[in-house]
Image 1 (cartoon, rainbow, N blue to C red):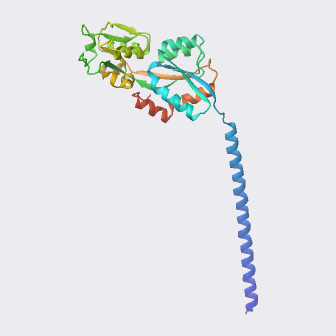
Image 2 (image 1 turned 180 degrees about the vertical axis):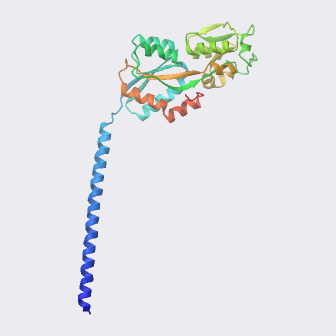
Image 3 (image 1 turned 180 degrees about the horizontal axis):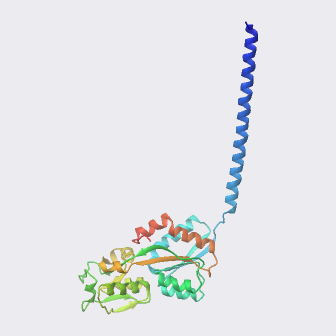
Amino acid sequence: MIPRSRSVTNRSVRRTRRTLRLAGAGTAALLALTACSSGGSSTAASDKSSSTKLSGTVTVFAAASLKETFTTLGRQFEKEHPGTRVSFNFAGSDALAASITGGAPADVFAAASPRTMAVVTNGKDAADSPVTFVRNRLEIATLPGNPGHVSSLKDLTRPGLKVVLCDRSVPCGAAAQKALAAGGLKLTPASYEQDVKAALNKVELKEADAAVVYTTDVKAAGGKVEGVRFPESADAVNDYPIAPLKNGGNAAAAKAFIALVRSAEGQRVLGEAGFLKP
């Protein structure tokens, strides 16, 4: 029989060894955790230092129909990137494309049709391939209350009704011609306007009874006009492409602005304005 004193001593030794092993494991785990934390901080610091802080002006040439939404996104961009400024040039896509190929300095081009974007890409002025970010369809804008009783595209051909269209060379005008062709209709307008906002303005000023514009423009005008949808517009939906340009001075900001336009937030702003998903 083992004496009681020896049994107690053996148990004490075993407890001491177990305590030392646990302490050693805890120390090793602490060292490993410290090493990981140190490495993570180093990586985070490296990522932070490698990211470029945006600054300066990013110049965006955009189709007139994008004025309201892009202005909103421009303000958001400046808020997210203090020290930046977004400068816009809104006009007919064809005029903007001609300016870009003519050497006008710009960082981003957002067109209302692939055809006008092709003018820029064929001229080797795009810094990357264009991507479609939204789509848009046509709608008839009439005076509030629709005094001309316009309910279809065919109604625009009635004698005595003063109608304006976008010029055939700009996307909204080309789309209107497609819609008229789809309906087998011929229309001689009171005037052809250089961009969609100019066409809409004719109705707002009561200088025209109706205009064929985009759904988004009717919505942006609020109560100044009344919209009339027509089925032929389904044959003339426009894709809107966007691309960074070579002749700009702020490639990093251009990339970031395009990313905002294509982001969930950008698509939300555009969708609420009436644009269709790409």
